[in-house]
Image 1 (spheres, helix red, strand yellow):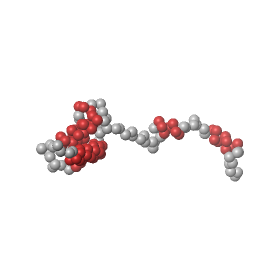
Image 2 (cartoon, helix red, strand yellow):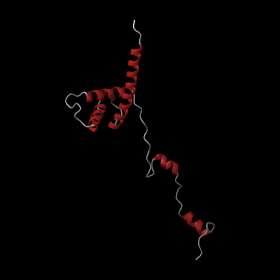
Image 3 (cartoon, one colour):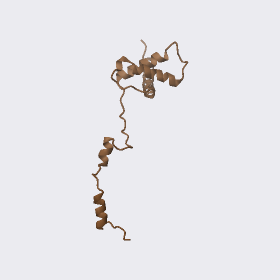
Image 4 (tube, one colour):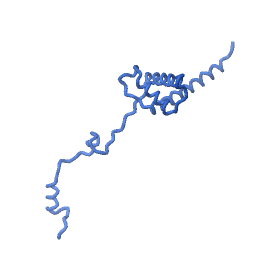
Length: 129
């Protein structure tokens, strides 16, 4: 038996008979048609309004006299998430998860602590009289 070579007419005819329309791989992946394609999520920036609602949620949740600090961290941040996402100031916004709230709170709290330290240092340096 004679094996097919790339130049033999049998091989070319076999390829031509099984042809199908070409698939543009780049287009299929960009359109999300391939089975393993995962579209990267775009990060959403926090706006000043969201920061204010988050601060309010944290204060109201942490200062709650009924529950107080008798809760685990997961329950605490879940309550903040619920408060944050139910705020009438954020109607039409995409809801945030508790982990996003916790991460943002860490950044806001860090900046506030730096500001407070700077402000206190400035007050101490003021000359009397």
